[in-house]
Length: 231
Length: 294
Image (cartoon, rainbow over all chains, first blue to last red; front, side, top):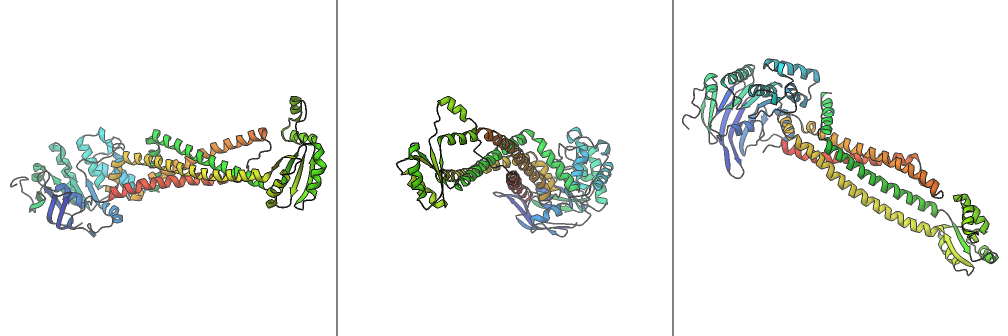
């Protein structure tokens, strides 16, 4: 899905400016890193693209959807085209790994047999099939992260949003997560990823958009950037 | 089909996850519908008794002594509103009592003599003549006391009116109580699953998909609670009919399958509607708020 943000500003009550006058275009199938200090506006920007947050002003157009004008009734159908890997995973503790992935498909009314096939395919792809009966608390950080990715992509979204997917992971696990994200991107999914991880940005080259105090301060097509270099 | 299976599975999970709270709610719903059902049954029985008595157009005048018989009968026969007059001797009165409660001989052995006075039973032509004629007979010097259905019916009618109002009050208090308790139960269920609901909405579940298990939970709690109350109520009512038919044989309570059917529709229908309303009120607001971008 193509993404177009024009003059987007987000002000939290009473007067905290989280994003200010952001212009951004992302083409379908691109991989984009969002980097910047904590509080620079990365997460706010990503949450607006999933329409958890609404802009105070400006336009956000994702594919055929104008997020500012979208009616509440359309929102579930838009979100089915967007996969999200949350910073805190948001895995459901009372469901096992397979159920955590399956419920996304059940929630959109997919038939049971198709759900089982899709769950098996994605868990196998992310090397979690043997761990499918484990509950999130029984899994390592890397496994939980992979499970969160599995849940985000099981519905084959056109857009994948990942907020710090390698945060708190060791280098080896972070690499495996990045391999997965790039393979998903290779299949045509637009991937937007917020990160603090300099190693990841250096090792897995892609477009880098740097934010500072709610503004885009640089946009490198194939980023050889230092994340906090000039800030 | 998958959605249907999910909703059933999830509803069962909701009902079992906070079993203590669910059980407490169920007990409350049962108590509420028992109170409603009891007040309804009491009210309809009193109303039916009042109308039974009202249809009885006789005045019974108790005489001071047997010598007054011919004078009173003569006066009554001359009144155009009276269709029929019958004299009841103390012996016949005892037989009638014995036929009703079967303890006539015991009364005589206890008191040593027949305590029942002679009386005349006069049947009037129309209901509106009942009270004036009864008052006229009461004024006869030979008459000790007068009993007529109209007076009792009037009292019962006013009692029925009061009971109707009482039943309505019970109904509204019960409705309010169960509304508050059921809404809180649903809210607890919602609260305990807030993260799950948030994630479901974030991955594209529709509000109705998220809400249906909660709505079904409310319907099941309301419906099952009302069914249990109905079962207990009908058992207790049957028992009461049996007891009263032995102890107070002249008092007939309403007893027909229509009552059970009527109560079923009223209580179970009310329970289901109430459950749906409570859940919908609690869930709709919550889910819409959770879905709305900030």
